[in-house]
Amino acid sequence: RKVSLLARGGVGEACARFLAKDRGIEVASYHSDTLRPLLRRLFPKAKAIADVSGRAYAADCRRRGVDCLLSLHCAVIIPAEVLDAAPHAFNLHPGLLPHGRGYWPTYWAVAEGTPGGCTLHRMVPRVDRGAIIGRIRVPVRPTDTGETFTHRVNDAEIALFKKLWPRLKRGDYAESRAKVSGT
Image 1 (tube, one colour):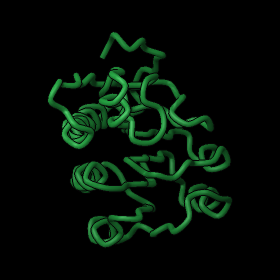
Image 2 (cartoon, rainbow, N blue to C red; image 1 turned 60 degrees about the vertical axis):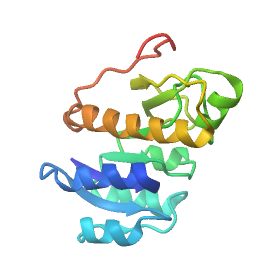
Image 3 (spheres, helix red, strand yellow; image 1 turned 90 degrees about the vertical axis):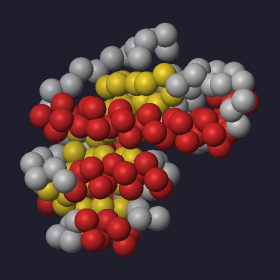
Image 4 (spheres, helix red, strand yellow; image 1 turned 45 degrees about the vertical axis):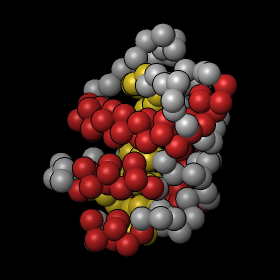
């Protein structure tokens, strides 16, 4: 499997370190606004991509034979032309979809009392609307702040990614439109 890795923050770092130990994949390219030096060390043969929102990135994915885009807390909305460049595109999201779409869903879960957790889903042109591969529900505690809840959800995201990666790598995963009550 050839991967293009789009990673940001602590979750992106933990997952990138996990992927660096997997000798069954090749990280062909990467993008990060926060982890570029680390990703350069972890994946020295990979190409750093500055802009993941256009035709040049899509063409690069095709040229390199990328078959999996992994968005791990990447703050960029990936356009359809890029998603079409690889047969598999996944996003690790800090919200329990369909609740918590968009940015900072952990804070909204605390503020609004909506279900919280994390989701790994297929990327499609509509943000956070792709088929769900897996989720972990993380209950909001009465003492939670947006920050404390975010840390617990981030830990769940890393665990979810590590659990599901072997199946994603093999292409052996189920997609669903699961209801929020399930995990």
